[in-house]
Each structure stands twice: as structure tokens, then as C-alpha cells.
Length: 127
Image (tube, rainbow, N blue to C red):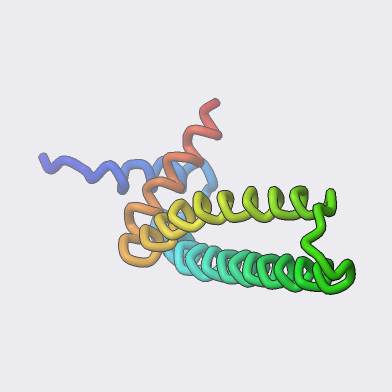
């Protein structure tokens, strides 16, 4: 007797829960893996662009404050804006590798991504 693949067993269990065939569910999850990669890349692109705009905006604002007061001013908003920029940068440094891991998994190993999604669904159904 041949031993079943754990992904196949989980897929059959989930398809029985939803009342569909395992092939239909696999095809839908495979398309979802591709869509997940595209959406994640789009979100990353948006936030990287927003980050670049924030950096450029900060330095343009800093330059205009220096020109307006004709000196290096200790404006109380500068440290607050710089702190926000630092927090946003740290968030981007953390978010990019985490998101890219998901993109690479769903693009280059969609079967593993599908297995992860099935396990998450089964855990949420059983809890």
C-alpha cells in the first residue's frame, strides 16, 4: 500500500470541508499563489515609492526651513519628522525581506505555499 503525500491528504480533507473536488481546489490555490506574489510585489513597490517620496520630501522641507530662517534652525518639528522617517525606514527594512520570502515561496515553490495555506485553513476550521 502506497503512502499518501501529506499535501494530498490535507487537500482532500479541505476539499471535503468545502464540498469541492481536490483538483478544483488545487487549481484555485495555484492561481491564488500567483496573485499573492503579484499583489505583494505591488504593495512593496508602493511602499518603497512612498518611502523615497518621504525621504525626498524631508530633505526638501529641511532645505526650505534653512533658507527661510537663513540659519540652521532647531525647529521642534525636525526631530519629530526625522524620527518618523527613521521608524518608517526600520519598518521597510523588516517588511521587505519578510514579504520577499512569501513572494519567492509562492512563485518558485507554489506547492509549499499551497500546503501552508491548506494547513492554516484546517487549523482555523478545527479551532
